[in-house]
Length: 470
Image (tube, rainbow, N blue to C red; front, side, top):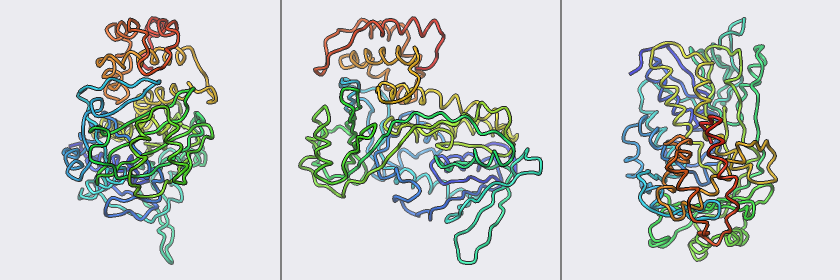
């Protein structure tokens, strides 16, 4: 239990990041108030403020571990509500760079709840905390600060009810977890601070999702099929088993390639994927709904850690800091790891120093950001700086994926990094590098393996430069 820091903390946004922040702050503040625009449901269901909730979500092993640390017993609770559970490698078909990773037990928990179930159970856990209150159907008008602007002291809110008036909700600490639409950069300007630098990687991602009922023996017991895109085959798809004996299929296209939302066009898009597993699983399956679309124009990162001035009493978390390309399934897991970082800052009983917090948050975000951006820059149509590091790492990973089609230890090592439980530099260690660079050039899935020259250069070059991230 953390020592008490103050009387009230206010969390703006009942997003997953907001709920996790509230869980942590409940140990350090007498009262925690969570504000959200939506009418928050009492049971798991989709809601307007989470439009991506209708699509496939990945909870990486690192995220599952973080959530379990914050909410002991949560994994068993989700399984009791029907969430499938298995091993990330043994029970998943991973098609990466045109190769199917060899399946075997890797000791990496794969938990597959729908987003509404996961968020609903976490929200119920946070509601049960005696010092946490939720205020829903409430608009956030702006922030309030001291006359010199050096400390944020509250938020101006408006309850959406007839005759309601604007109210100032005071707080010792304000946490912005309002997502991609965060207005903190604008509020900072109003208080005389510079906006954080914003980095964008425009990917023009389009989604379409449909749920199905599949036969009990579908996919021979596997829980998921994931096919990533390549420049030669830029369409991707993921088929996940969910609670309630449902399967969710999300299809994705980049740079303006929109998966259709009419049933026939949706199925035709599934058939166009490079490997047949997904299409064969759903072509005769029972649809449970119509396809629904979603568009994600760009990955965005706000560099709060680079600001040399920032007001006390205000923090920013979750998608409001960094919103990743969702095909990599990192968002929920990063939110969990960010919450653990916040907990380290409140455990001492002193007020959180924003600039120190943002520096630690940047270290959490760096690895998944580099993974996502590096993966996106493989596609020629995506604009961005293709540094030597990016080109060498992508060449090395292509070789690793080819070798992992035969080598279980390499498949496991890669998924430990992708699952945010091991640092990327483990893939550059001598034992892994020797296996990657010495692997047979024989293609695993009919794919022609490109030249090994860049991959061979990658290990010594990155090691000499001291890069700790891929």
